[in-house]
Length: 270
Image (cartoon, rainbow, N blue to C red; front, side, top):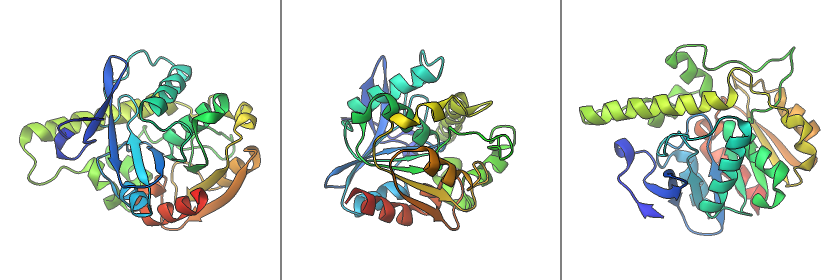
């Protein structure tokens, strides 16, 4: 992993070469390697869930998908197939092949897509509020057809939990404030490319191929994907070993309840 100047002071502090650009990556802790594949908030530096996973005795490696915080903008990612291939490549570049994985939101969706075509890509998986299923009479909400402040409230139950992404440090130089704003915009754009206007790409038809042990988590106060989807995922995945509803957590429960997520993950990977 090469060193790099942290973007705007706290975005991904390292980079790895990827195609004609790079992916940002956060690495911390010692012990068996555990991968973390982020959700819609990206990887705004060394955020709490990464610290908690490391404190549980893991070497945590958290790459940023193309276009998300710390990574080059997407190039040639025209459809879901391109995103799945890119994610599979990033798993190899980051040295995560076969490792246990914690994945959230859009990252959990991509992890399932990769596992469906490449079962050896991951070990046991802990998935937090994945996108990828759709029920007409219980629809997934659109987090992009609203203001930034409302989107923030949809992503975490406690809006302060997402401060590392949405808020600029008080002492940040003016040019870095602009850079922060650009990266927030690019991250939201990359997330929208994956799930807008409808986050349903036929994944349900491929899930029978996901043989990895899967532990599912869902925030009880998820305002994007109803908590009822937890049981739907449990019904269609062939090897679910545990389900958990996290109180006082929104869509990105990994930001709202990082310690609880880390405890469940550590138990799942033991």
